[in-house]
Structures are given as C-alpha cells and as structure tokens.
Image 1: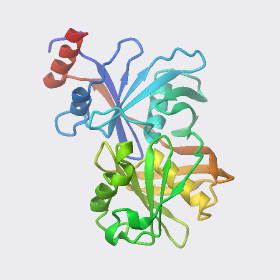
Image 2: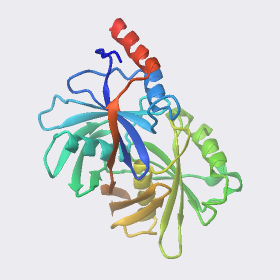
Image 3: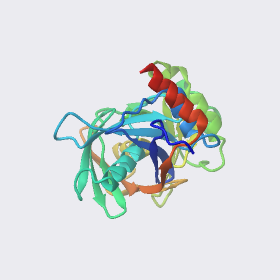
Length: 294
C-alpha cells in the first residue's frame, strides 16, 4: 500500500462498553470535520465507535493535555465521562502525566483522573443545581415516571425515575421523544437517563444519548447525573454507589451540600481495544481534501 503523509494512527478504547476512536494530535494536527468524524465512527464503513476524541497539547504548564470530544454523528459535543476516563488511560499508555494520574482540559473545564490498577477514577465538576420537572409537560406517555429531573454534569441530562419496566418498556420511543422535546430544544436536545432502583438498592440505568441517537452500553456523565439526583433525593448514600448498565458497572461517589453536589467521582474500567492506521480510501480522501484546503 502507498504510505503517505495522510495516513494517521488511531487508538480505540472502551469503558464499560462505551467505545471511542482516539487521535493523538500533539505533533500532527487533526482537523475533525463532521463528515470525517462520522465516517470514522461508522460501525460498517469506519472503525466504529460511540464518539471520537482528540488528544492535543495544552498551553498551561499545569495541564497535561486537552480533550476535544465529538459524537458519532460528527458534531462537536460536551463532556463525556467515559471518554474522559478512556483518554486518561490513553495518556497513561503514551507516557503522559504521572503513574498516579493526569490533569486535562475538557469541554467543561479542568479534570483530574487517577489510576487504580485497571480502573480510572475521574473527577467531575460540581453540580450546583438540579431542576425537578413537571412530568405532565414532558412526552412521557405510558412511562408513568415517579419523578423527572434535569441537570448538567458536563453534558445535559434528563433523568427519568421508574418504579419498574426498565427492561420491558419501549424506552427508545420515549427516549427519542424526550430528547427532541420542546422543553430542551434551546439546548440542542438532551441526553435521557432511565433509572430504576430495586428494593435492595441496586441502581440500574439505560441512557439514550444525543449525537449517537440511540442507547449506548454505558454513559459516564449520565451515571453521574443519576447518582446526583438519587443522592439529593435521599435514595442512595452517595458513597461508592454502584450503577449497573448494559455494558458493565461504574462506581460513583458524590457529596451533597445545601442542594448541590460536590466531589463527584466516576470509577470504572478503561481498556485499549486496538490500535492501528487508517487505510480506508474514503477517509483518506477526506483527509487529503482537508489538507489541500489548509
């Protein structure tokens, strides 16, 4: 095959089944145009992922790198919790930061991540407010939720509390309806988290993600949002709360202070799936066009 300057290496990581294509752009810039990112994330014509993350340098000497996140639809997005844990793992594997952890800049500000064996513990921003929504104003239909809240954990989340039915109700239908609902139109829509807590205190979660436009196996900011709400409602202690999702389990720590959440941490696995070089002609042609325009 022809070896050209267009060829770029990539890494693919997953955290609890949430998977990401990652590009190290510290020495060779990467222009994440929408069409290019969408193709790379496509599960039939590209590498396949829930999103793409670019790791770049940062001008602040106290920051190890910066993180730029794009959903699989190619659009630049807000913070991604599992993506933040995965890019921290990539940084560790590239020799960035220290053996203990890294400090990086994300779309919602600065974050610190700590390494605990194969697990990554990510510090999230404080959550100053949680809005309790009027269920009747949402397209919830036959869901009959116990309560509905809205908050921002680096990304917007509408959290829907269910008594039962997490495995049987057509959540995709209601996830789409709420995600595109008029209440969230000014925000470009919202992620939607359906949560159910068993009598034994087991927290189960399914998240419909905007930009992916489907359920993902896990969602980091969604997990943080759910534990934030449950902590403020007094349904969990906020200490080492285990949240089960289709792709695995994350542990969350959160401290409630006067109606706000502080010291919010997500802990879970983050692993390298594969690494290689992009060879797809369509992707390379897109890169070539971008380089010619530069």
